[in-house]
Length: 400
Ligand SMILES: *[C@@H]1O[C@H](CO)[C@@H](O)[C@H](O)[C@H]1NC(C)=O
Ligand SMILES: *[C@@H]1O[C@H](CO)[C@@H](O)[C@H](O)[C@H]1NC(C)=O
Image 1 (cartoon, rainbow, N blue to C red):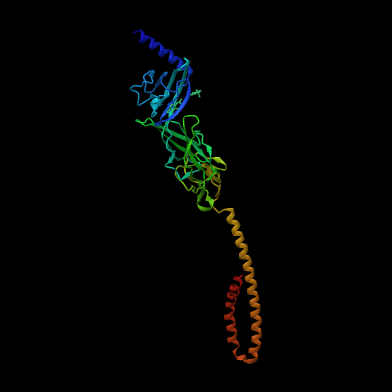
Image 2 (tube, rainbow, N blue to C red):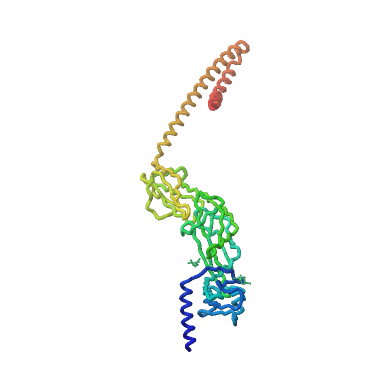
């Protein structure tokens, strides 16, 4: 009984000492052997030494002596006093302490904090995208790291620079799973980016695994290169019916806002620079057009990813029913042309008449000399010919 109480007190003292000392940090790879040296111990038996450990396998402190015992498969004290763990596992993480007394009676203590690690497989980007759309949140891919311990972290890089998730242009969805038997971690990180307009056209993305232990190297995936599409902003324009934008007073005019992508667009209308308070619609109907309806019209198409786009303005002209001023201007011009043509025609006829009269007089002179008896017939012919002459004159005048 007294011995048990003494041992309990000894354990308490040791645990306090262990907590206070802390000791050297040792990292050991899972599955590999680990040797911890007991400082101050004689190289060969007989030795006065004791190993104590508090790990995932022990319920409290476990004491190991050079004589060995049932823990041979997990840990055993070597002839030179060192402690050997033939194959460390996650459960061997914990505190190891040795207390040795040299031949001349000097006591030395050693303490270790053992942590284990496993290097995961090279991280990979699965389901990588091939193209991204500027201004549109798009999934780049999922980075996967399998079989690591401790969990560590996954980080994304673009064109060599770290991508910090800001929830705005860059977002990351992470998942950590642990293998039920091995206790090793599988990390997943899905990256979604919204490429900026006018950004790099061929950005590269890579992912790296950072171990959760100091002085351990990060592992990098092979980079993937993506193409960023910049969709041409849709051309927005207003079509008017009737064409030309002229409508008579009291008539009907239809304005249609034309966009390449009709879906998911909100169309608003603007008249003379002021928004019209109408429900959004791609068609604006003007019934019984009034003078006040005259003006410039444009439409604004609001696209969820491109923002609003305004069409060029079209002019709507309201005309009185009798005929527009523009029409009378045209009439006047036509009248002038007709007048000029008429004068030219008249001059042509006059010239021809003069010519015909001269020709007839010359001919009559010759006929008189030749056959005076046929005079009446000749005059008839001349008279019949006369009405044909203005026709010829007209056709020549019409040709410019
Ligand atoms: C051991 O690691 C702990 C954290 O895990 C740290 O606070 C301590 O300073 C380390 N000790 C040595 C000796 O490096
Ligand atoms: C004790 O022996 C082991 C295995 O033979 C060796 O790795 C270790 O370094 C030795 N320890 C000392 C303090 O020499």
